[in-house]
Image: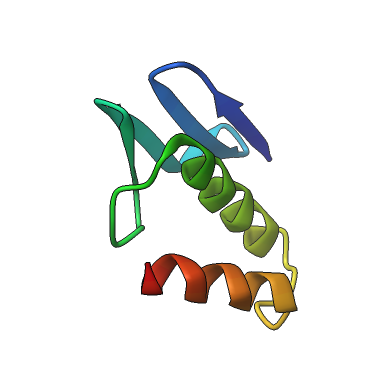
Length: 74
């Protein structure tokens, strides 16, 4: 797994295949599979969270639930 972060795009790759991507739209970011536009730090966190979950870690981890709730409720 690899997380690539550039000025205009970000991606999460697994075995050379892009699983999730983020594209900059002005000052905000559109992340595939995410319900709303995020700021740069939120986009990095969303991709990191996806990497965590794709690695087989539990969705029950307290920080996962808290971050999802915060992002969906914002």
